[in-house]
Amino acid sequence: MSTQMSREAETRAFIDKIESLSGQNLLACYQCGKCSAGCPMAKHMDIPPNQMIRYVQLGLKKDLLASESIWMCVSCLTCNSRCPKGVRIAEIIESLRQMHLRVRNDFFDVRKLPSDVLGDLPPIALIGGMRKFTS
Image (cartoon, rainbow, N blue to C red; front, side):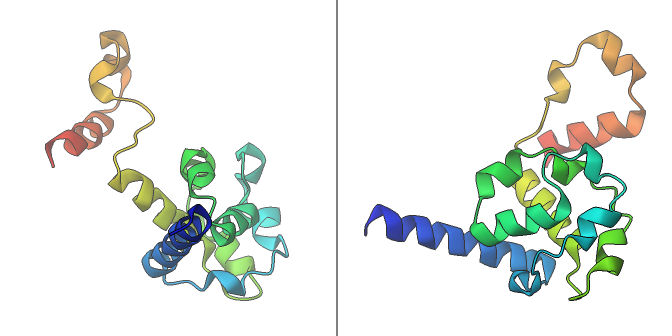
């Protein structure tokens, strides 16, 4: 199998996985930008919501999973309510988060935090972080 064919298969598998997890048809999005225009967090994102959809459509998995934008979404659902095609973008972003967490690529390791930082964290943050290491 050629490199091109394996890349296409990998891209298709990524797109299928996101569609399966989110329950959304990614091809319904025609990039009108209304989701990003209404998003209260878009100005803080390196990839705004409409571009996240485009990245998925193009199979740019590495770029998306390395993006801070999937963590910036506050799940206010403004994007969902503004989409003229009924694409539930928040569900797509959540599926990207799930995909990222399933391979355990964390932004930091709780066990490596300095003790003065640990003392300032809310207990639920520590519990959530440590739970990943015991499951």
